Length: 154
Image (cartoon, rainbow, N blue to C red):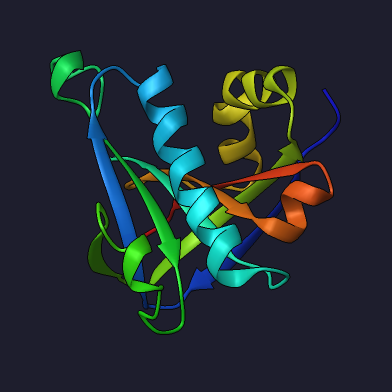
C-alpha cells in the first residue's frame, strides 16, 4: 500500500441534506443511497465541487446488523436544492468536529489496506479515535482518484 496522506483539520458546522438507510454495512442498499445522493449533487451543482459524507452511525459489534444505520449527507452552504430533488432527503446540521483525515487511492484494495493499518496510522499520529469514522467524497478528490476518511478526534 502506498503511504496514506494524513493531516488534521476542523470541520466547520454546516447544513446538509441526508438520506438514511438501515441494514448491514457495505451492501447494495448503501451503494444505491450514495449513488442517489451523488446524482442529486451532480444535478444541482453541475460543475461546482461538492462534498458528500458517508456516515456509519452504529457499531456493528454492538448493534444487530439489520438495524445498522448509514447516512449519506450532501453538504451545502445553504439548503437550496431544487424542490424535486428534496423528496426523500431529510435536513440536518453537521456539527463542528476536529478530525484526522486519511487520504488513500480510491480503490477497494487501498481502502481495505488502510483499514488494516488504521491502528498503526492512529499510533503514528499519536491520536485515538473517540467517535465516528466517515468517508468524505469531494468531487475534486474522487476525480483525482482519492478517498478521504475522517476520524473524529477529542
